[in-house]
Length: 122
Image 1 (cartoon, rainbow, N blue to C red):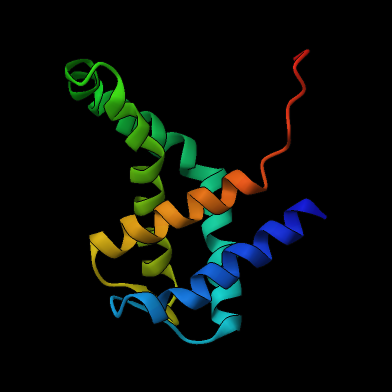
Image 2 (image 1 turned 90 degrees about the vertical axis):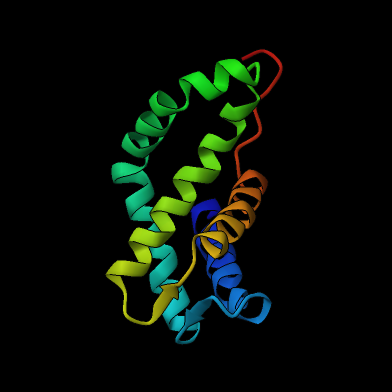
């Protein structure tokens, strides 16, 4: 049930995003559903690889910023996954990297809402 709610929430964010920035095009809510589905599949299949590469490339900036740069790793990987999703679907387009980073930030925040709660004993 949580997965279905998260999928619908991500779809709603994607469907609403063209209202906020003209750099994103979504053909309709069905296109937003497909975009959220493809984004989720890419996140599961290659998201770990993108996070690994970004983490390895950001070791020096991470050390220089005392680890604060590593907070950007999920945001960068979300932006890359959104651009990949945009390239795979014709009815969903993210034209600029700044739009991808903005939408990635909002999607990361939505993902935090649907994360399972961990108890103190774990």
